[in-house]
Image 1 (cartoon, rainbow, N blue to C red):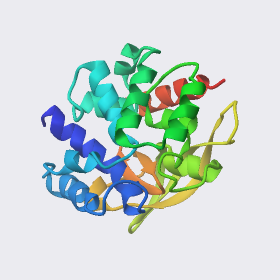
Image 2: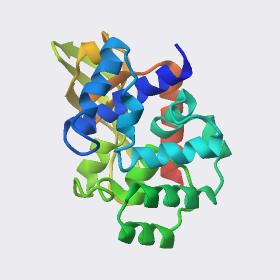
Image 3: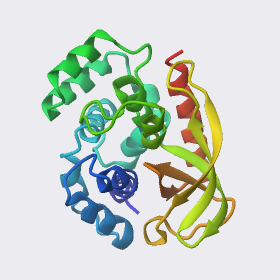
Image 4: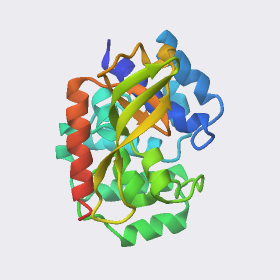
Length: 237
């Protein structure tokens, strides 16, 4: 599979769940993401990404920082899961992200606020967005609290049991809404769609986004997600 196809599939699996709830992107995005995941036809994915008020600026910024295409799987993984490409990010690249926010139409009051509260360490990942900018603040779609933090972050957990279209998981989640952030495991039941995620078995580790199982994770992906989640959390201490 070429890097663009891998990248577009990863975008689709993670962006589909908030879009299905009406939080991000156009209504037509759901069909594009489903087609990419179920049928391997990913041609419409990047056109839909343009309308995601948060995702698009981050991928644009990472694309420029890393000198890669936006849908390169290394760029996409850096944002959603984290990988060593993030080691190339410099503190001044935060200004590039803010420029991309302005061009995307993020409210000016929020951009002014972000200019005044520069992060201790700039890690342009999804979890950084959730905690530093604040889940829902760019779009106004949801309140900022511990529930929405956990719903929006990319959580991971081991499959304990499977019953029809639901899986029982031991799911890594953030414990508190203020620093120092801590991770705890919660026993939860989440829906999943085998057509989009693939067949699961007990012991598999999966990613959850907005209370939907969205991806079966490889061992390497689990290691990268664990590592970069901790790196982002430590950057707020």
